[in-house]
Length: 120
Image 1 (spheres, rainbow, N blue to C red):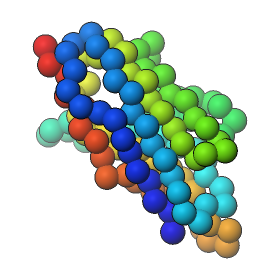
Image 2 (image 1 turned 45 degrees about the vertical axis):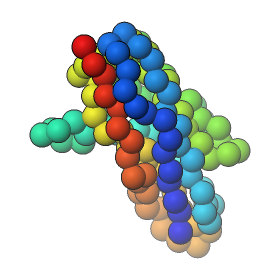
Image 3 (image 1 turned 90 degrees about the vertical axis):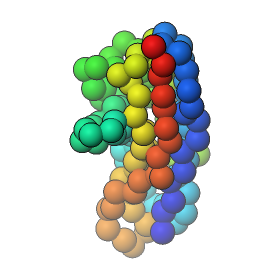
């Protein structure tokens, strides 16, 4: 089994910064990609950013130039540095990892979510 745990988040004023961290643990044989989604009240969950083990990144247009995703393959961790935050960034942020155990299939694993609130 694979567990995904996020940390970070909180309340910040518009223009401020926050950093989210996520660690995947368990019987991991391979994990790729890792990423972050978010869900605001009344809206669908959307991709924020993802990163492959080779370092290729993908960002939502709304966060390009403000957010940076990074990854430590040896530790199975991923971080999301969020700068120049806007009230519209307010959401629950979820870490996700596609992973498999040595003899198991690929599955998507999700963290419990962490609240990010940006005040105007």
